[in-house]
Amino acid sequence: MINERYPFKKSWRWTLIKCFDFFIDPFAGWIRRRKFPTSVQNILVIRLDQIGDLVCTLPVFPILKRRFPQAKITVLTGSEGKAILDQNPFADRLITFRSNWFSRNRITNPIEFFQVLSDLRKTHYNLGFDLRGDLRNIILMALAGVRYRIGYGIAGGGGLLHETRPYDAALHQVELNARLVTDGPVSKLDLKPEIYFTPKEKENALNRLKGFGIPPETRLIAVHPEAGYSSKEWEEEKFKKLIAKFLEDSQNRVLIVGLSKAQGLAASFSDTNRVISLVGALSLREMIAVLSQCHLLVGNDSGPSHLAQAFGIPVVVIASGTNEYEKWGIWREPSRILKYAVPCSPCHLQHCNVEGHPCMSEISADQVFEVAQELMCEGKGKR
Image 1 (spheres, rainbow, N blue to C red):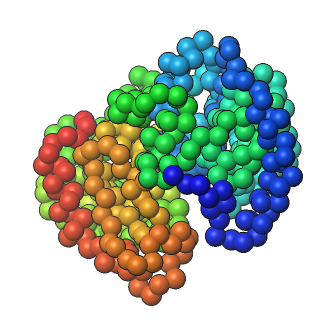
Image 2 (cartoon, one colour):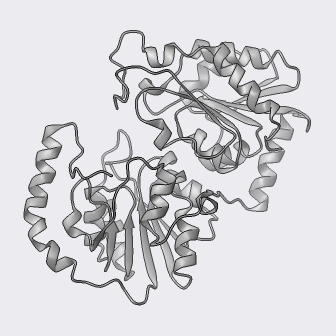
């Protein structure tokens, strides 16, 4: 369990948040006098961070709905979260907020912040959950007037919570999130994430693939060569070698998905119709629907690897030493993590400062291909 309240590497953050708690903590006893609501009509769940974080949160919503069947569940999430939660029968309302503290390279518009806050205050939330353990989310719940607030408080703001839960750093994030919203034990059956589509969305995804002339017996392999930070990126040349090895089997076709960074890789295979580039061509929701039709996904530690697992699609993750991927990544079989052990891991750096970036450069295309072949031979892909 984490008992340390301020797990920050930067001293200015530690100092700032400790000062905040110095003024708030004297009121904690008064705040915690409030009892758990006897009747819960409205629940607020805050999940503003990245795609993978939200996918790890998906099991929370059916758990809450079973526990409070009459309650309306509102999710405050980022713009990417809306694409993941759209059509989810357990989330009654989605409010999007592009916060600067989780949206990379963005400054929050103060007008947008107060519009969201005003919107939240219109609903009288009996119960609220901060799934991250983040001071800013806790303050937002308090300003929104959430009557009973539950979270971890490990990064400050615990004095504003009516109930703090233990943060067990040894648990995978999927299980940790589920435990926060329930008082009882969590079954593995409760930890299955689901992403929902309308029949029309499924049909559009199939039609898009048919438009590329992909026959039903084809093994469709998605490759996602991008990541949020350069420290998590495997070399483009190795992705080229890997795709070339996939093409040695005439049954395989490769889909390259991603944004602008993947364009160079896609251009390398412009002379073959067996490599299909969807780089920059899909919205996030369209990409999710297409991924649901693949047999396998190979990629860096990034959102699509989490999304594929939501459909039970085998995933090969090429993981850097940036973080403890085992606590955030694969939680469903059949999938594999390829990781090269280095003494500097976990570094939590956006850009590697070690010559040669060994945690990624030591992973070869042959290693990735061998693991991918093993998963495909198990024959558990979709389509």
